[in-house]
Image (cartoon, rainbow, N blue to C red; front, side, top):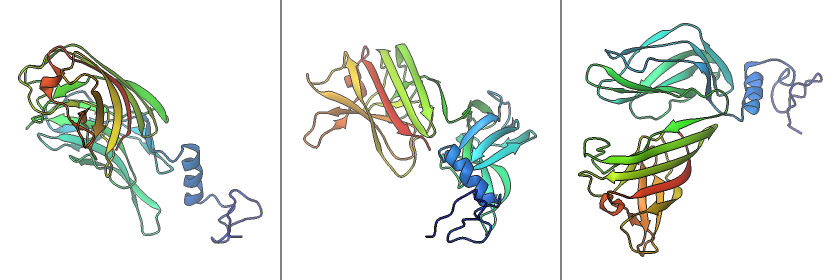
Length: 277
């Protein structure tokens, strides 16, 4: 049989090379760490960043993370220059040689939210033309962690504040197991302002994974202007940080819920789950 058993005094190396069953090689140790961490990448500690910065260069403190079975320690603070007028996604990533062995760990900033190979998200940041206006840490102390988020109603123009919409209550909590996010949303409107067209919910705690669209939950509504008996649902597109709201009222199964249908006194209450990028 071509099976490997590690660690084994008798060096049961299967279809590999002599020593694979007993030597503390890089691949053997990372395989063990992957097993113990359910093959998940996460920040263990550190990597704090300031909430804002007067320019586009931000200092990231040292920290520790697990990336593809590697325990990575960044000992000293590092400065990173971010892209202006964008949402920046800052990852800690590994560089490997042709044999698959690690040669370095470094930061990478992008504005797409697409993770580089062998990486973990450390923080996100919003920037203006000349400054960092807000940051959000992806600190994940172990595989299970959680927090709160504030849902925002918008239309296709992504007017999360400028359309004059107001709320009597906004609340959300989230809990993560590895990259699987469980969350709740409670959104009570006091006015939709000048919002029009299809309705969306923004400000999710994490971006949805790429290459897959996901139905994320059924909504319990109050004061919504739709045909009696119509159910509401929520979904997320691939590589998105926006919830799309639907009415299950058409022959094809669904149509987009509009801001006008939510009304100035509407309440949306639901739980959902998705996999973060």
